[in-house]
Image (cartoon, rainbow, N blue to C red; front, side):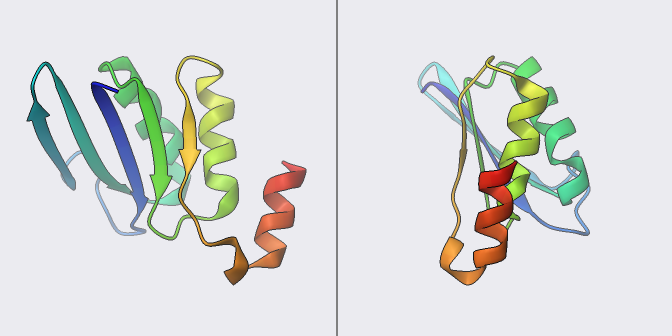
Length: 97
């Protein structure tokens, strides 16, 4: 992907300020810290800015990616980097969602 966005969980972050952008060739990668309740909003803004893929990571709850995907629909792929063995209840909630 030429333009990618990674959003990681930071409960105290201001997503407008806690971000790193790296330009590469004809694309870019942006990494943004955001509270769980703002991840979908942040993802939508990043897709509006041209992100072609969104990755949720950094200790986010398993349902965070589901909420982002629900908001974005099928506009871009949404992935989750997680460690589900830390929370079987979280894995079940994600599957249910």
